[in-house]
Image 1: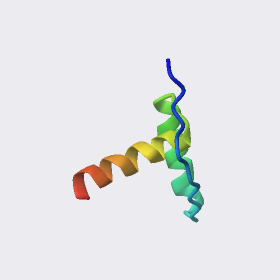
Image 2: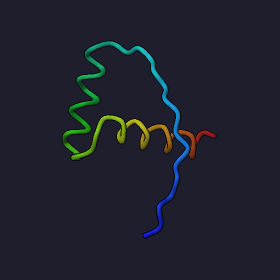
Image 3: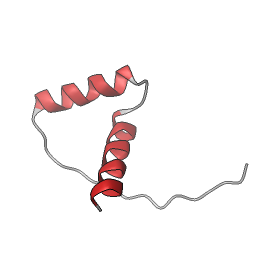
Image 4: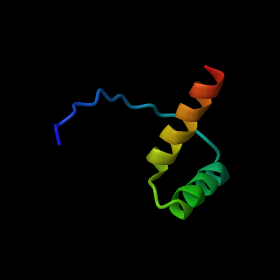
Length: 50
């Protein structure tokens, strides 16, 4: 498998604590990290609304 260099950047934003807890629960239920869940949600949103 070839090493693929991924260009990454970091995005920080504030959300209510209850929303973070809900998102963490969704991520745990899918056995993925919170970051992976947010990437998935944002990617799908941009794909459909972009």
